[in-house]
Amino acid sequence: MTTADQMPSLRRRTSTKWRSYPEDVLPMFIAEMDFPTPPAVKAALEAAIENNDTGYAATADRGAATAYADFAAQRWGWRPDPARITYTTDVTVVIVESLRRLIEPGDGVILTPPVYAPFYHLVAEAGGRVVEVPLQDDGVSYRLDLPGIDAALTAGARTVLLCNPHNPLGLVHPREELTQLADIVERHGASVASDEIHAPLTHHGATFTPYLSVSDTARRHGVAAASGSKAFNLAGLKAAMFVVDSEPMARWLQAVPDAVSYRTGIMGLLATQEGFRHCTDWLDATIEVIQQNMELLERQLAEKLPAVRVRRGSATYLAWLDMRALGWGDDPAEYAVAHAKVALSSGPTFGTGGQGFARMNLACSPDTVVEAVDRLRAAASA
Image (cartoon, rainbow, N blue to C red; front, side, top):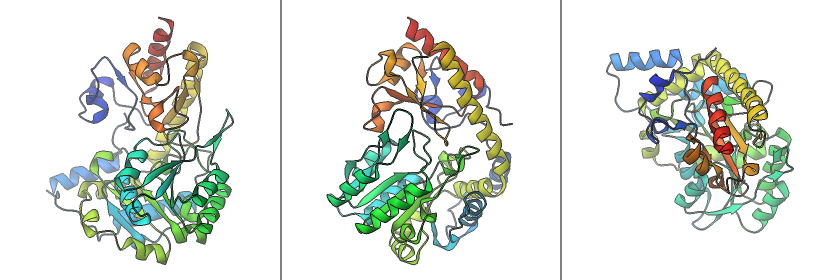
């Protein structure tokens, strides 16, 4: 069983999560875990420090790439060639550098909101233009709007920036939909960049499908962004991967400047390798805790604050909360931090469909979940 650090220990952390708000605010916004570093990762990092091994990363080393490929084979039945994997600092860099080579300045990049808020800035940074094709929402579940994506590509968009699994919803896209997406994209001569950072955090009982695994068609035009940073809480160590799985895309990837890879952190590569190679039991135990926290949140809300509904997904440690019935406006996270002292992620920043919603981080202790609901209830009753 993975157990979160105690609050006094958490308050001593210096990361964004713990330094963005005063101590009377419960931080449940940014995607950082409250859990301790996986033991094998911690031991490897300590050994590196003891050996004064803090120089530049040897990006020609295939250790982290091979560990990821083996993990993908075991979990998802798909093994990319480690020789076709290139390192960089983080997934946002994979996305920006990929888009810079997949589009021309001013080209449309399709986003499927509500979606990871920084996507909007990354498209602009790469010189693209955001084209929203919101997810279809029947009030119970979300899914890709494939006809809408087809229409947007017909109108001139050149790339789909896919979130798989989808943040903030925890949506795991079905294989059949990804296969159809690949066919649509190929028909238009377009491309897909798939952010798969949350894939290792797919819940037990659900099946994640890597975009590049669905067909030769997907492999001809797709690049995936992969990392151990969410699964093993390594964001500050700076390592991520460009993953391609065809000869044309391998040649395409060679155009990425060497400097993009040289900026990778040596500790990040080491931690990524250890995580994917030796921490799968830790990961499974952590996913179990996350799922228990999801269930606890649902029970707590049903009992204490039934006006708030969890739109539950099948991946990540992020809960998408429908808070519209509270009357807290388009951005209930703003009201929550001011009146409940609970910091959530702002729903509107995730684009169309985010108004009246907020995102809650459940990679924490059960006590934190209970306290958060109690604070929100008190604010709603005031």
